[in-house]
Image 1: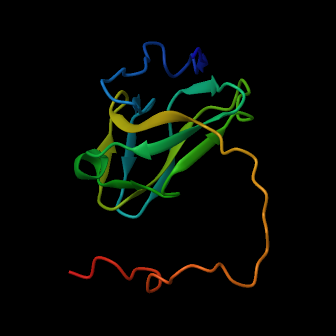
Image 2: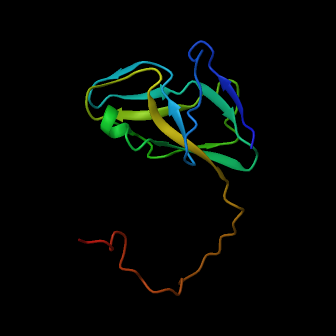
Length: 143
């Protein structure tokens, strides 16, 4: 799969994707960021990308992001569809700082993978699903 990537030149002169050995691609902060506890910010990732038709990208923090930087992603998971592909549609990571923190330009803070979009579905409204109840939301794993 080939992807067209446009880097935000004034920010990312030496930016590159971090090719890992997993199915996810690490992304770096394109700017230095200082946040006080409970401040939020859209951290610029420094690029726009054209996804192939029929695909979308999922953006999530790296497993070490909270430990290393004390930030969480505010929308839990970023979903970028293939219509977000304009020259100024730069990717950003919305974060909330849990503690005072500093993120340096080039720090790996999140990751993404490309997934095929959900196929067309047909909704059928019914009175009963006809299946056994599991016990309600949050009913498993009560250790």
